[in-house]
Image (cartoon, rainbow, N blue to C red; front, side, top):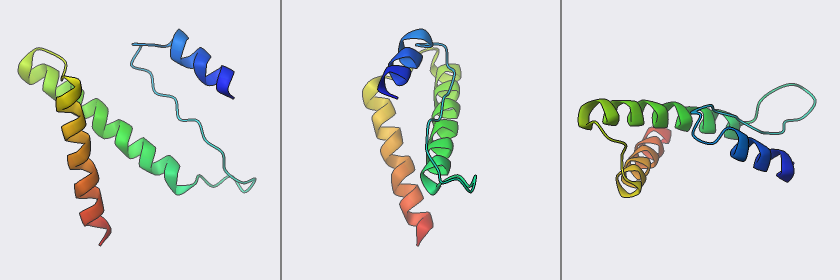
Length: 80
């Protein structure tokens, strides 16, 4: 699995393709972590696209980290 993940990272780096790797039991149901990752990736793609459109550049690592913390805080509030 490690070699496969490395291959994907090397081969598709900067391609903006999304791969969700996971394991679930034989019943075919995806585990909650799959949906969390899917939601996060959707938000991340939207944020980067909107940021780039608004500013004409990609967000810095600091700007991106700040935004991810906001998503996590908001997600935590919605759980209650």
